[in-house]
Length: 527
Ligand code: XMP
Image 1 (cartoon, rainbow, N blue to C red):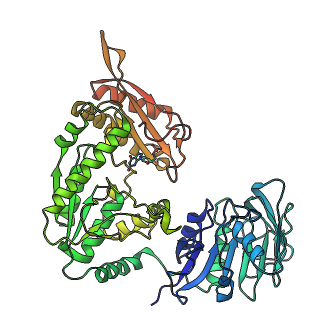
Image 2: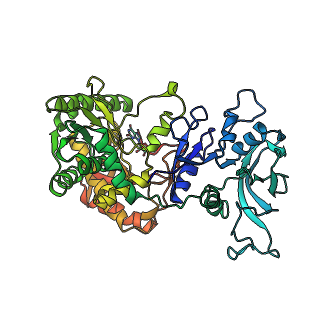
Image 3: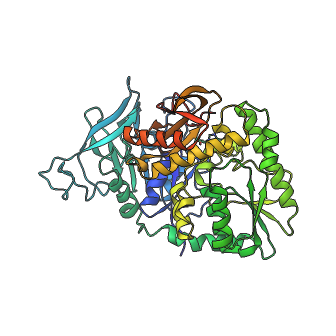
């Protein structure tokens, strides 16, 4: 069956990705496109509906992003959110905007005046239940973030809702299936946001919501098979992280042993990770895996290096060099697979316009000298979808739910010079911390947790003797995207237990410190 898709046009808003995700959660495949590209890369039949995202610009400014107004004549349902709605009012005849002296940001009370199909079936009795009834209070708490507002709705539109500040908070031309919302239905703070989006997608665009990850396993496999001819050989750098692991499992399912994986052990992984990657992929998946023990080579290159950026550069470069050497020895390789996922594509700005393209560097960078074709089977999937796909393919939970881990590994969690002795101290302390956190009350809140080894020593006392050992810094943060983060409130008794175990078991450590800084102003990693 042909895929039906909702396109989300990106006008630069902070919630663009969230809109696309919410739509996928509603069981409909969605993709983000730039206003310039519009429907260019899709067949007209494939597109079932369009969402215009919000954006930071003001339409009163000359260079505000816009879209070819012929999009309104395609007969596709369109939902404009925030800036997207204002753009509709600006482009369609009869509509007008006004610039407000101050912006409205945060919660507002939405008074629904007309239900139309967009607010269908949404409880409005303030108790979170029940169908629409005349006697009910017709208001919802919604999330606003805008400067300008609509003065006059375009011809053919009716006002569906207002707030105390806004005479037009929602509008619709139900004949032409054009809708606008000044608030953000995609954020959690908006009551019934999911239902409102659901109404647009299911009722208005007429989609059933049958898209799910199970279906896409077979879809992906046939996509890969048709992209690669029978002679094609694929090489993939496996890092042990979620994305490259899922890419490996998927490609192996699609092309079998024509996939060759290279796992470079740079000696900077956490305790047990190397063995786990090797076991999972060779024993369980029986996948052709070349493991390169490059620990000494990396350590030699890192000897005497203290600057964090210099460490990153050395590690990235050494990685690519080794990968090139190893891949160069393989026969019949025509393709290089990468574990690029949708957020990498969006962050690199590829969908915005061709000029800003920069390739995403997974693991340690792209071997530029190799003339291989790139294949990126996870390019259109969000992280949580990649995880689901991994589960579907039978990868163990330890790999699928692994915390994000920086490419340069433990080298940027050791302040100062990286030596084998210091790596081992860090690995031991980190392993105890991880083990204890598994049992913690707050384990679900943790995005990343790790230990950092500084290059100072402090005085302690053990029995009757003075010690002069390393402190260890523990950091555990909650986050949803690593852009901002907060430190996790690990209960005092748990911290106490962790601290005691570390100083008892790791003889070089005589002090434990817990980092209680959020990001910003700090970063997640110490280097
Ligand atoms: P910061 O420390 O900038 O980290 O708050 C944000 C996220 O990025 C990860 N990180 C890296 N990942 N190479 C990577 O692949 C790096 O050099 C690197 N530095 C930081 C970090 O673990 C966190 O998830």
